[in-house]
Length: 129
Image 1 (cartoon, rainbow, N blue to C red):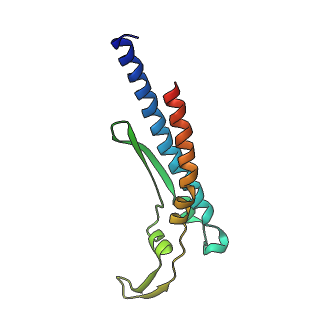
Image 2 (cartoon, one colour):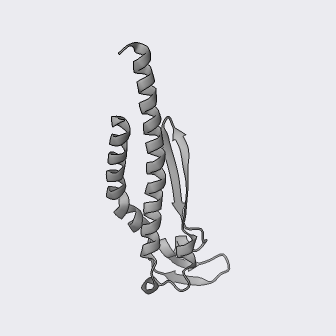
Image 3 (cartoon, rainbow, N blue to C red):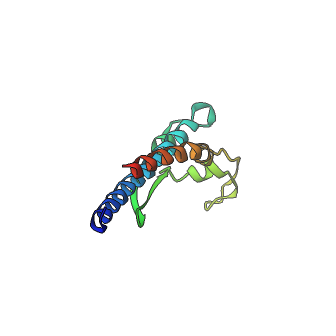
């Protein structure tokens, strides 16, 4: 194989890996989104399902040479209080003693092995051609 053919093959592999990385980023975010939505069920303090419906993913966004990022987050303002809890007065002077009811961090933590396995398979396929 001459240098030009090698460079062409290497560039093709780099393009396949970049495409795979973008796929891994968004599928990872969607996996976490589904797990977080699943953690918000009726017995978990959910009244209307608005927070569950507000969880959305976006991306993939380029974040470096061949690297991609995707975001997943709840869209309602009270999700942080639900996840972390809140004690004390708010900006209106109302006093709260809300216990934490984590739904997002456990979802993300539980899906890391799933995403890592998917990434390994996807990158191996991209490198193998």
